[in-house]
Length: 310
Ligand code: UDP
View 1: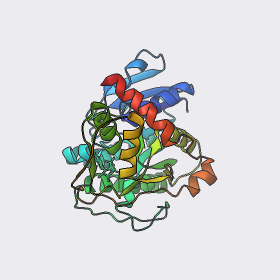
View 2: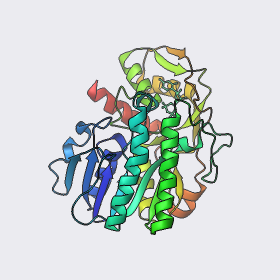
View 3: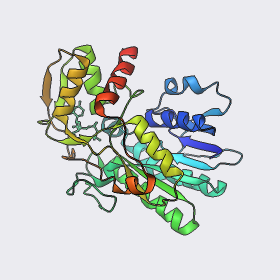
View 4: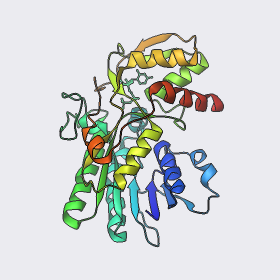
């Protein structure tokens, strides 16, 4: 992995991936249109001799001179609030952006890695979710713009693998949290942490009985790093199998921040998945990966990061 291109390189996950590959000796080219990504996430890397940033919308065009060993397509709004605010850019980056990134990987004879998502399982009727589960997605609901874009991206990726023989890696990412999430990102962890630190009401949607499984960002990056170096041309779940209700997550944030905020209940968004938990049998067996950072360690690191910028 001498030379790596990462779309969405200025985003939350993208910026952590840039650091990972720089630390491992690669040259890294980060591409981002800065719709939801932020230059602040990569500011500390801009002077690095092996790092380069290109501001570009990958749905229009994606090319760089020279050799590439790995193309990682991580550009996309990822928070439900963001992709509902930008439904068409979300569909375009998942569809047209994936096509452009695959075309680049094919031309450079590079490995292609796709950021997919647990959202391909929609509101799952099987739990935990193994990679073999086909999912339960409402194509025309408010979440369909993200879910279907990622499902199309997976289909396109496998088509390039089958038709052109390019090596592909597909990571199905489960709810990930950590430093560099935006405070106004809209997802549960950044909302709860920002609300708790500001002494504002902590907003739990619905009755808080819906579940999620939270992965700390360094665990995710480790899983992705192992996946791209593996020979697995198929989707792999990377996520922490510890499943918690949203109410438990809100209470944990309140306890760890020692906040006096009240927990309040708001309307549950349309098509909000009731459960989500990864089956990580495949990652354990083939990547020898499993999460190492428990919520009780990862949340304080996230809280400390939010405190700095509040
Ligand atoms: N959620 C919540 N309060 C918030 C933000 C989100 O209770 O302020 C809930 C949301 O309804 C969902 C869960 O937290 O059930 C996770 O939402 P998030 O937006 O983090 O990601 P999702 O897993 O839905 O993609």
